[in-house]
Image 1 (spheres, rainbow, N blue to C red):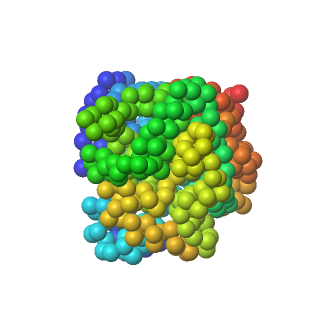
Image 2 (image 1 turned 30 degrees about the horizontal axis):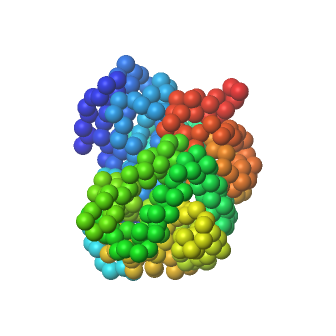
Image 3 (image 1 turned 135 degrees about the vertical axis):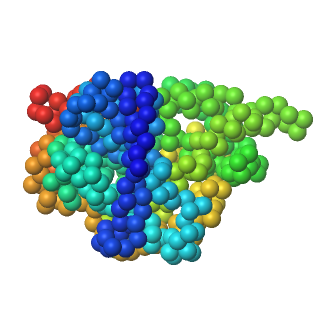
Length: 433
């Protein structure tokens, strides 16, 4: 069953598909996938090639666009676009604190979630492609984690791809999660230093908020326990194009006077809880480290363990001296599952995933080295979320892949510079530049 409707300049069709939960057991349990087809209103009767968009994450459904903003307008000049909610996200059999208990206890939930990584997503894409394209190859555009999925696609099923376009999402082919986070903390520190250089007044503001959180028990209106570590994790914003400015505006009016003394304002708390809550994307917290797992080594709360190697991120030590409080970001920690009411029921499930030792490889270096699919990738210089050195090493390992390395955009360049970014990648993949 499909529903078709219109928005300014586009015609949209809701598509639903049934796929195996475990593609190695095609006659077993199934799940439902949701995707939105988009075509320009003046091209509805044309036989256009398809572009599959894979969202970043893990854990985020595809963009809910209105009209054709960002990269979408450029894509619709050449393609019909399929915006896929990857399994467990959006309307594709969502996995969260409400639905996961249907699987059973934490052990059953953890087993279930091992099938929500890029390898399963690629097999979903190949399962639905014949229904969408009639069997023709399609172009994949992968943003961030969607780019990880695109590299897995080139490893597992290149025969399904006409072209692969990747933005901010070339993963290391063999790095353990420890290697990923060991490279990440210095990048995050550089982003924080750049923020404080732009907004030096925020040094004292951040110190004041951190001190308040160390000396007060603050619970946000939605029940989120707002600790100093949670405050520091707002540094996630610094990896986007306008994130430094948004962080500055958040910090500038954090306190209001009350009869009991200064307190964090309701407005500040309201905005913070929206930024910190994983209610809309719990898979990000649950499998974020698992997307790097490819062998018998557990991830074992990698970001938390590696953080101890960087004592400058300890807020209490910074406040004891005169050092700035450093923000973090792009990391998930055990305390996240204690603080966030959307994650608390899933703490034991997360522990089991962190201890797991039966992870399988996600990439095939030999197949990538023999790649014949035209491919191009935007690599953002000093990307806070994906290590540039790891990305460039992977680019060299994929035969024929062409890169555009730029410091014009941050990790969300496909959003902020959409048409130009997509134009550049298409030109590279088509060997026009």
